[in-house]
Amino acid sequence: MSAPNQRHSVAIVGGGATGVLLAAHLLRNEEADIRVTLIEREGSFGRGLAYSAVQRDHKVNVPSRGMSAFADDSEHFLRWLKAHGYAEGNDPWSFVARSTYGTYLADVLREADRARPGRLVVLSEEAIAVRETAAGIETRLANGTSVLSHHAVLAVGHETQPARGRGIAVRVGSARDTPLDPYARVMILGSGLSMVDAWLSLAEANHKGPILVVSRNGLLPQAHRDVPPIEIDAADVPFGTNVQYFMRWFRDLADETEETGGDWRSVVDGLRPFNQRIWQSWSEHSRRQFLLHLRPWWNIHRHRLPPDLHRRMIEAVDQGQATLIAGEFLGIAQHGDMVDATIRRRGARDEETIEVARVYDCGGVSVDVEASSNPLIRDLVATGRGRPDPLHIGLDVTEDNFVIDAAGQPSRRLLVAGPLTRGRFFEIEAIPDIRLQCARLAERLTGGQVAQARRFPSS
Amino acid sequence: MGWRSGAEPLGVPPRHTNHSRQMLTKKGKYGLKALTHLAALPPGDLAFVGEVARANNIPKKFLDAILAELRNAGFVYSRKGKAGGYCLARPPEEIKIGHVVRVLDGPLAPIPCASKTRYQPCDDCEEATCRVRHLMLDVRNAIAEVLDNTSLAEMRDAGGPEKLVEEEPIRA
Ligand SMILES: Cc1cc2nc3c(=O)[nH]c(=O)nc-3n(C[C@H](O)[C@H](O)[C@H](O)COP(=O)(O)OP(=O)(O)OC[C@H]3O[C@@H](n4cnc5c(N)ncnc54)[C@H](O)[C@@H]3O)c2cc1C
Image 1 (cartoon, rainbow over the protein chains, first blue to last red):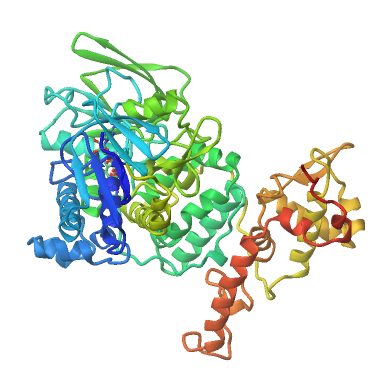
Image 2 (image 1 turned 90 degrees about the horizontal axis):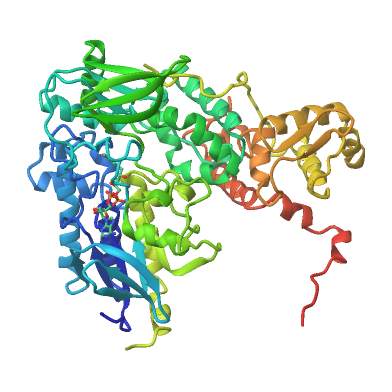
């Protein structure tokens, strides 16, 4: 077991985009006397769920100008692209392959390590539990050893198991996603960006069979367009109202913007810096209503597709290769090689059972942490050291990202970063927001760290 | 496909516009007084409009309209009938003064040209170079900062002679 010394130490569990961005921000402060241990079970750093995609068509959904690792150095990613010979580096409004972005993040980590030698330790291990001790926090690894540090940050990201039809439904690109009969009929649950990923994988594999896309609303993500965000201040935004009032305000603003030759996207993008505050100003009832009635509608406007992929998707629907079904997914049963999926179309009274070769679950990646497949999260929740947020879309954390335990007591050592904090922040899924959160956390963890470090006895 | 694609998720009332010509209108002031009144009620109690109007010196018709707007925005809750009346829809600690003022008076702005969504240009000056407007944009952010960080509970408890006698119990 490695013991913490005087030097302030932070263990980060998860080396996906969030873990890497946090490590890079922690090491960026040249004055901070800090040691960072980054623990990642998959063996590669900076990839995680989103940027481990290998297909060229699996592109980022944020233009290059928004994907810098550092919010205060917005050209960083563009410079990296140019330096590495990517033509996209010359176009701030390009959409790179997600694998390229993963390579960039790995470089960001390498660069952070090079700039501050001896400060970063990376471990290719799975963390299975965390325990607070008198002197710090212990992160237990699957290999039987532990890492002891002053703070630990969980950046374990997305759930990797299908939320629905467990054991039968498959996640795209997972080990169980074996080659299919190209003429077989398949079903995709969900119609968001992950569905488009799945459809692109099928297209890449030359799949010719019909693809049924089932989602509650049957809505496809909208396309990006290169338009500037509207200028708007906090003093203009109606915080703290109910959802109906807010939506009316939003629609009026979008209408007015379009009437004067603008684009609704400018309104969505202009509001983005305020989304966390809007979410937090709502009552729990309003947040629940938003999740229940508006989330899918919001998602297709907020999380948009690169225009070329959008066009191809629309074509596939027009040509009948993909069929959008608005309806409810009810159940799934395996029989032999085939799968029976039961759905109810919107407005229909009767259920319908459709035989397909495979069901892909492309539903939301936010899963109730009480049903997590991650051993560390399971342990955290089972031992009462952590709990779901009131809406069960992530872990309950304080405004400063500290984990709140089952009794409502915030931890002083254990923090969470990234999408798992969505219960409190909501708009914390994509890089532009994650990097800001990492910058804020790094500042807190390195600022005042000297005073804090003294409180720990050396051993 | 525009931003209206898909189902209309919730019933959306007709468009409304708010053109405030003044930092805090009478409407805003009355609304805040009424909310303060409701915030002082024992939990679970409702107050009749007439009662609130009388106690705060607000014309009842005007207050009816104000409370209806506050209800539409989700700040107050009303019940019809004999045991009816109004009460807060959220704990007074959660209701921020700035949030209420935006609903009643529109975007926070010391002068109309210093609003971005309800911008009303002045006919006698150039927006881009007007130094007054620049300053007023800073002022509005400062106003928002104060009003958004003050809750209805804090406003209710600020000053007022009857509060002076309510002291924290002294514990040994
Ligand atoms: C398919 C997809 C595409 C996306 N595209 C974009 C995009 O183009 N642009 C954008 O801005 N955002 C995009 N996003 C948003 C995305 O949330 C973030 O960009 C980012 O992936 C979040 O990274 P993360 O590290 O928090 O989570 P993850 O990517 O889930 O990474 C978590 C990491 O932690 C590791 N881990 C988990 N548990 C343990 C454990 N117990 N021990 C050790 N290691 C562990 C995992 O192996 C994984 O590598 C996309 C998301 C998805 C799902």
